[in-house]
Image (cartoon, rainbow, N blue to C red; front, top):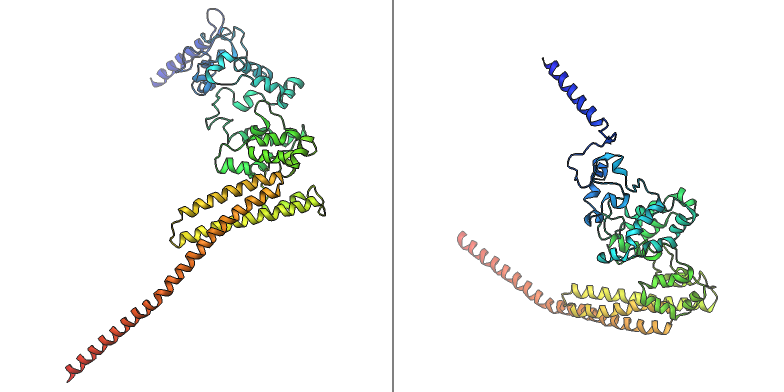
Amino acid sequence: MRRGIAGLLGAALAALALAALAPDAQGQQPVPRAMGVDTANQCLACHAAQREAATVGVHSQHGVRCVDCHGGNPDVATLPAAHQGQFIGRLSKVQTAELCGSCHSDPNRMRAFGLPTGQLAQFRTSRHGQLLFGKGDTDAPTCTDCHGTHIIYPPYDARSQVYPTNIPGTCARCHTDTKLMAKYHLRTDQLEQFRNSAHGVALFQQQNFAAPTCISCHGAHSALPPTGGEVASVCGQCHQLVDQAFQQGPHGLASKAGSLHGCLACHSNHGTERVAADQIAATCDKCHASNSKLHQMGVDLQRRVVQADNDMQSARRAIDQLAAAGAQVGYYKFRYQSALTYYLQIAQAQHSLDLEKVDQLGRRVRSVSVDLTAAADTKHETRWEHKLVLIPVWFLSLSAIVLAWLALRAVRRTGDRRRES
């Protein structure tokens, strides 16, 4: 009996399956409908893997549907009718860029979102665009390689591939591929260098989103390496005061003349290391002979910067000593902040190689450091004076305790003798 029922059920299911797969009255292959699919977008009946993209991401939030990019008819669930109407299946990289640009280059569409409209034009002039459009090199990235394909998050979303902390990794997907980069004679250690750089530490460890990423220096859609004469201007977008000092000095003139690669003469590009105070002269010696006047200038500059560095360390120690001694350090911390301001100005002024200005700032730092150190020493001496004053008090107190103990002991002995007698 059970076998008979099972057989009937199996036959019924088989019949239903055949009916679902059989051609309809018009000879078209029906598309199986997925449970829970929005009937307004029948594309998802087959392309169920993209169902999430219909509800997640910035495009879906603003009503962009499959048909807006791929064409076709989203109102039917049968083939070939669903793929009629200028349907485009898998797009090439060039088609992708042009398709994205068809909306993102339209000021009327982008105005509502406050988005620029020159990305496609910039991309065409970039190294990536030159390879893709000019040479047909499909190893070059297109829009979806950086932003994602169907699910695209806005740049302020941490899930976005162009979120600040994700940008280096997005670029590194290609630029750490040794086989791919060998084709263009490019190095593949940029990400490692960047992570250890001052910029990388600020971005990844300190979560400082004002720190630059790859696109800050190379551009986003117009990705190009800055030329030697452009380096100082690129760095100066953030380091404005340093750039002003640099342009006023002899290195700035050499950079404008094209004989010096701007900031890269002393700092590396992706490593962007800080030159330590005691390494200034050695850095100068990379270009200038050790027996030249310019070498001596480097030595003089280093001596002044090292002195200011030592003075700042002394000021910090003085505040710690004052705090340990129980002093109110609010005023001293205010003085320290003024010294720190002068010290940071030295870091800017040294790029102009103006030793006189560095001297002036150094004297201000030293003045504050001497005052704080003197205050700490005075507080230390006062504490010892208080301790010395307390020595007689301690001695008298101890003597009184000893005398009281002796007296009590004598009284006890007297009492014991009386009881014995």
